[in-house]
Length: 488
Image (cartoon, rainbow, N blue to C red):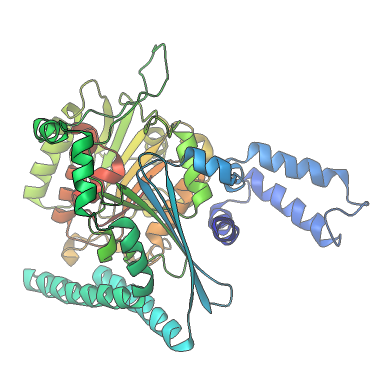
């Protein structure tokens, strides 16, 4: 199932990459040459196939970072060896003819025991029409949230109330649609624990209850980060996660869905309610590539993390006096002190200046973690064709992007709505896809156009959780209630 989803997903990711490449990009010439040769030969194993075909293909594989990521496939043994414990992985993929939905689920507990579930759900015409309606209604709702002219407080409150009712109805419909799947998942994620099993656990460890009380409320040990300059060792230390477990023994869930379903709020399903971290990814092989890039060690339940001395930001706070004061204080005074020894460099636009294209490239190129907060979509400020210049992403391992907000019409940059990059439905996924192909291991991006005040609260919570408490990005985003898609 993972290979089937990978094969479909690879075409979608490849298209996202091809759409942003300029004519001068070296991969454009390679791909055109390969296509031209294929068009003139019936099959690639033809004896008359020019030797240059293999040379170009090898050159593409060796020198193109996106294609190296796209072609990184893990075997079943590698998956079982490298996927983290205390985690679950859900695949939901439509068949080519949209007649069936394939479901695959894998769960790994702390002792690295695996549980599996596979199923196939028939999607008749009525159910398929209902699914399409949900997707279309959500797209319409997102567009309305972005483009509705708001001039007074009552307009904003009315829009929020209408949107909340519509989203609640959508989640309810989604619960009913996926009920056959969630019923089985609930038994795996939240199994009932019998009294004799509880008594057996207590007898096996009589000091357990005392230990739990003793540790309750203590700050969790921070996961090992990447050693600073001059460090003698890059070994990964063992990490005991402070996150709560479900009765099934998992603390995190990674959801990988068909492109048709990716905008739906699947994280909001009740079956995922008590899971500490719920994140998304495009496919399981890409997820394993991310883990590999950060030096993840399954047996240690930890990775190398990011270099805290190489953090950067670009923050553009909307023209509201109170928010500017609070935001400026947090970014300039509090954020640099959250993690001892951390070093931030960045631009706060209302006190500094609007960053140039070169400054954008410099901020991302010199950071291991890049944070962006603005009313304006990142792709409008930093065009996608520059993202395809992958040389600036050699160092960056993680990004947090908060750029979808809704407020009074007078505060919205009108160029945003007329920008060729504006697409309320695809924009977050497009950014996630492009940055994933650049080799960014963790991406936090908000799906919803919320008020700037709410978005900044989520931004500060994410920073305090990640830097101050030492938890992973996905954990900090999800436990604070951020309406975000975390792709760790």
